[in-house]
Length: 137
Image 1 (cartoon, rainbow, N blue to C red):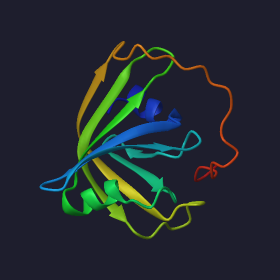
Image 2: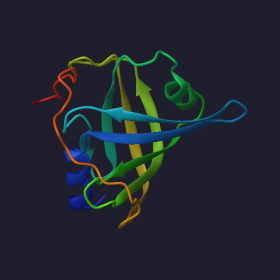
Image 3: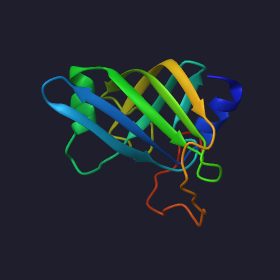
Image 4: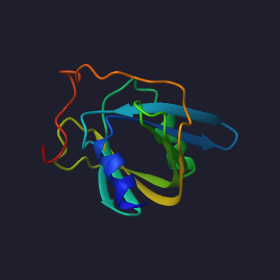
């Protein structure tokens, strides 16, 4: 990822993750938190906390069977999209990340940025008071 793309990811408060387990199906789900909840380790690695959710574990289960994954980061002001594909693994030790039950480590293999990919626009109002603080915040 370029420096600008790394900054985009660091500033994100939401993204979508797609996974697939052969014979069992595919899943796309949302991950969110305050900006900084996705840690950019370097140009090719991301780590994000996984919090208590609907307890379905579709994404995590798929990753245990098949580490291939795709991430989508949207810029809601411009409609630009950042697509990342790579491999992910679940680290069941959340270390010292506030509110996390586990971490997901993602190694970037391909990057595609598309300008004006989405017609959707969003106006920010405020972050949820239920969001745990981002690590280091």
